[in-house]
Image (cartoon, rainbow, N blue to C red; front, side):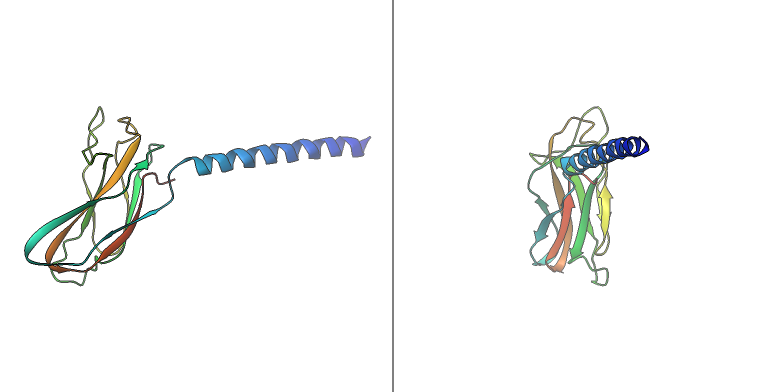
Length: 152
């Protein structure tokens, strides 16, 4: 009798673990937290300019911050390097207006990573892009980084 009770308890515990694990894996795969690459070509100029690129459109599935990183091309030792700025925009490249306020750009100084807060999800935007802007000061190397519309 004791063996049957232990077997039943063990079967119930294993079932709970299996169900919990399968639900957890569905949740983990449901958002858009994987990284996409972005890049800007090298640029030579006789004056200070700004260059802006828009990434491909990604789905926004939760209220977490977006994520951005600069892998190379934003070195702090380059004279006149003023950084790279990132902000989340709608699929057409416009500001995320709505009931919740538009948040400022996030400045990246050096080859670093940051969360990029936005109210995209709260303002009911389903598709977003990352707008990436850098100041070009006479000569700028190629810049490369990653981004994600959701951070978890």
